[in-house]
Length: 121
Image 1 (cartoon, helix red, strand yellow):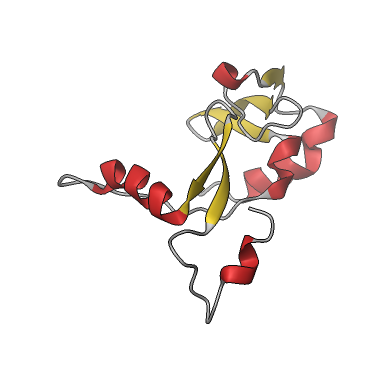
Image 2 (cartoon, one colour):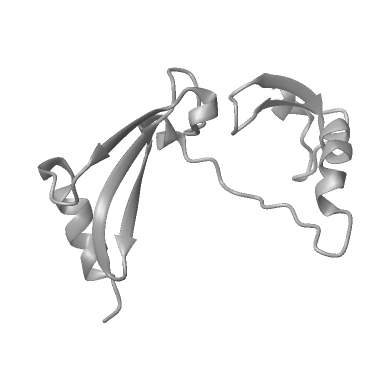
């Protein structure tokens, strides 16, 4: 949260440091302390296969993401999934807009040339 970075000493944030969070599924926003957030995350760590993924936030997600659908090694369709304004989630449940394209769509020519070059033979 704004101003909270002043609490950091030697790379350590105290448990009462406030975080501004945005849910990646439905875009709702909330604030929690680090302590509250870690308690919330505990349910994902419990059990034999518990895990939590720490993924860097990519600010360009607001531009959307492109999925390439394939049959074998042949791209058959692209879907551009774009979050609603102010959102970070590209799920239909969050209101994201999905647009289908052909793999030979001109606007994705550079992307597809690089993608095809990476397909193992």
